[in-house]
Image (cartoon, rainbow, N blue to C red):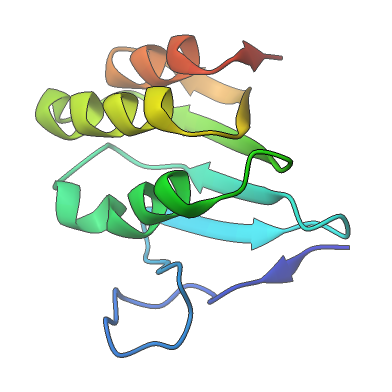
Length: 116
């Protein structure tokens, strides 16, 4: 059902993929081409989220971005930058609460256009 864009690797700027996955953020597409972004650890340095930020800035408006979050929070500077780019994103963003979501994770869920 899901296709990985680049699975469980460290950030690699030489990749031909427009989206970079690492151990903190993984991005998959479903059969309709909608990206599913998984944040499942503490939110750390913004460098670890550049693939997600790149996705937010390049995804077309007819796509739905699914943001799956299970985190106790983390770095508020990184969270603020992600939130800012979420608000600039042309696509609809649906947040999925998949476990504990607190602190910085709550900020990201509330920045979504809708959440479940």
